[in-house]
Image (cartoon, rainbow, N blue to C red; front, top):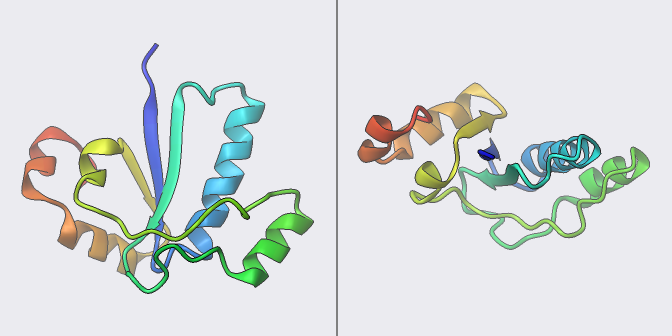
Length: 113
């Protein structure tokens, strides 16, 4: 069976994108598709590499039944354009940033850029 890899992207990878990752992971697990869908998140900036998600986000997520405690911030990398099939970007500014760092060969081989 084919699989798909999805990456949620925001600025620092400590609020919006890890929240989206956690919700998507839960939905995928409920649908029993965890073996077919790879889920991750990243930021376009480098300010929060290896940081835990923001405490306020973790608190809000926990109130809704999502656990973000195992996630940590990372910056999008050139290798991600070959790894992921789909990028879900949280806003226009991060979409522009993602497009600006997309490696040219990815454009020819993937529709991500």
